[in-house]
Image (cartoon, rainbow, N blue to C red; front, side, top):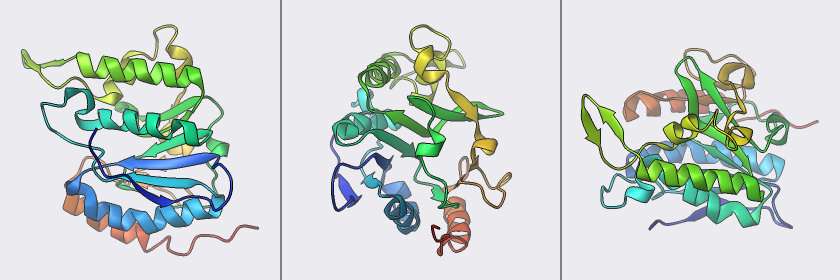
Length: 230
């Protein structure tokens, strides 16, 4: 997958326990400009690494294996040997509560969230162990070779990472990884319509980029001075 890898932040010493990453394209570049200082402050506070892939998302139909959201799987493989766990987060997101640690939100080898529409792939945390990698590789391959049928027409370019992981939640042996899906809001993964003070993360899905930008700018201004750690 062709992309420019930008390592924004890495601990000064030793191997980082956790790396946060995002994959996006030019359409979301200005959202990344808002997210970056917020993510940097959060990562620095807890000693996490932070990596952004500004060419990690594409809609080139000749590159089916990494089309759309599937490119984030390859980012996971790139990062796997450098940390103990990896957290993917959509770039249209902000860390609102800097006191919450990723370690305290794991609990399993792999965890992601769901809302009324079902499981969401905009936030997931994955261990870098062999079994988790094996199951993610299977989901990646499944996403690349399967197609959706919409209105009686086969849509090319595979299925999304979200649909691939959803389809494996109840199938052994993959349910041991993908079944750990928790309610988004109680977990602290919120959206503008259900955000509450103290929530961990706010995300702005399903809206035009300009609207995302305005929303992110508004909330970024509210969390420029995160709580100091006791």
